[in-house]
Length: 559
Image 1 (tube, rainbow, N blue to C red):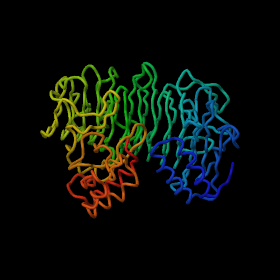
Image 2: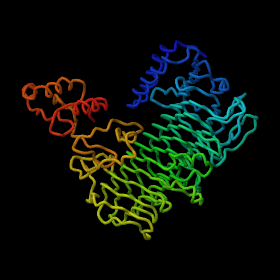
Image 3: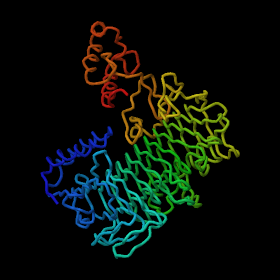
């Protein structure tokens, strides 16, 4: 183990790590790491694990005595780490306990494989068969709630039968069907970031039971796929129950072939799902009741769920024809969410060859406000229904094909259609076959959105958009109103003010000239009209365009 200068070591190590993965989010993470390092306790310790490192194995790290600010760096190697462990300690807001992967020369994340893994001494914890990495709930260290934990940059897999592991008692055991790559049994302020989560019963499992409730969970920039068990609908890519949980910028791929689970299943209060790519599953989203915790059900945020800026993709034959389920599934109807699902600026794409249903609302006390979405099916519009049967659905300014219906089997709920739906044959994607669901310049969805529901503002404003894969960028409104769906259309190479075909810092002087003296700008850049500086497309070059220019520059060069 190596003690460190609290500022300099992260300043040196973090860029070398984060630049390897080549995602735009890395810059923000590096800045955060440098800022964090300046406030870390000077006694914080780095533990480096890997071939030729101070710790040859993960198990040699003193997990039972980690302190706030400690960081475990797991370096990539060609062979997987076949080890499993519990994180049963507490960091702090200023100095979380971090477990970070250091990628290989090609950006490979270190692999943590639960198959034939070993639990190291002296760790001792219950439910060993439920996880590769467990957070919270252990005898050694003595802990019930883990707090302020970051897990980042790992490839975690292998927690499903028939795989086995050697437990803390030295006995070989089998994983349970509902085992997870990462199991947060009881945690607060937990972040799981930039990991690959795969080939397990559940990918990520966050639990709450009775008075023991997990809180403040952030799941971001991960690739979660190939989880579940063949022939079972009880295990999912993620399965979570907490108070305050955010999913953002994740790529959810299909589950294991033959598995019947959902992609994202949740029983939380205060759920936010934004800017994700969610493809496949029995349903893309299954948002149901908190069956194990009255504390979650009694939390005021239980009645509100925000889902926005996502791409929800339904392949042919992918289980249930419903994209989304909101309400409950326990049968205890009084415990169902019975609140409002705010569903806006999503792009839904179904390539099913049969019928597609947008959503199931469990009872007529479940309500959805759906606005500014693109809901596209490759079949005729007559093969699309909004509801399964029950619920109250408000529709405003959504795109769908003509001919869509209320419900295939008869409507027992209510659909309030304000007459503003855009109904044309084609939403105008750039490349449907290549899954580029950005809008082209001829799309009928451009500038067609309405204002968001006041209840979601300001925290639910749509300020970002998903970037393939596992990243995001600023969403800049380029016209008189925002566009429908998950993406905002911008002219080719928006903010190319010096007309050199690119977008970079060299466009700033040209913008300033256009702002201050339009004729001088057009003289300095022949063939360029000063209107190019009107980034907000409101026929005026002003402070709003400055904001748009900065956002576009931060988003990177033109494709």
